[in-house]
Image 1: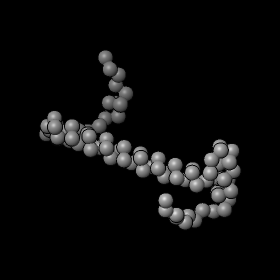
Image 2: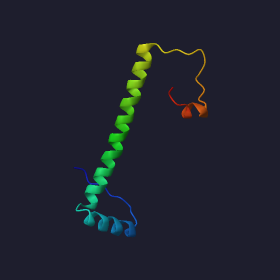
Image 3: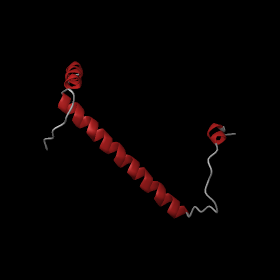
Image 4: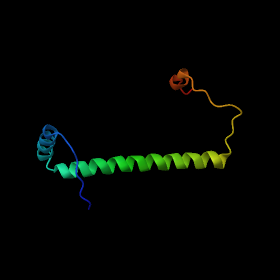
Length: 79
């Protein structure tokens, strides 16, 4: 594992360590898990975007003009 240096105000470090102790973990583990969740979420979004682009290309979706979203569309119920 790589070591990094972070500049975090002492009051935040103390509060975070207290939180970690109450939750039977460490500050290091909390930061590592948080960063992993950010990277994982981004990878998931990238994968979904790639899949969407593939489906659009595969299905040959074409529009003569761009779709214009209407606020009312978000509230329409299925009949």
